[in-house]
Length: 142
Image 1 (cartoon, rainbow, N blue to C red):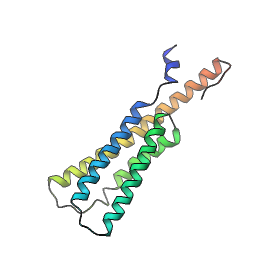
Image 2 (cartoon, one colour):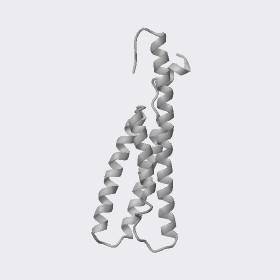
Image 3 (cartoon, rainbow, N blue to C red):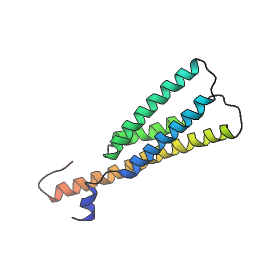
Image 4 (cartoon, rainbow, N blue to C red):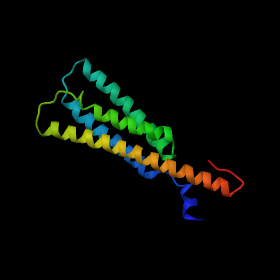
C-alpha cells in the first residue's frame, strides 16, 4: 500500500490532540477562575458558557479526527470565541494569577485555532487523495 493510500485510512490525530488540549486548558482556566470569582449571577452565566464550550469542543475533536470540514471550521470559530472571552474575563485581582489565567486562555484559543486550521488543510488534502483514488479505481471510498 502506497503512502498516499495509507493516508486515506489514518485518522487526523494532530487536529484531534490540539482540540483536546484546548479542552484541558479550558478546564484549568475554569477551575482557577471559579475559585476566585465573587458569587453572583455572573457565575451561572460563566458556568453555562463553559459547559457549552466543553461539549462543543469535545464534539469538534471527535469530528475533526474523521476529517470533517464543517467541524474543522467550527474549531477555528471556537478558538476565536475562546480568545474573545478575554473581554469578558472575571474580575480577579491583578497579579500572577491574573497573568496565568490570561496566558492559559490565549494558549487554549491558539491551540483550538491551530487544530482547526491544520484539520482544514488535512481535510482538503484527503479529499484530493480520495478523488484521485476513485479516479484510478472503479470502486469508491469516502
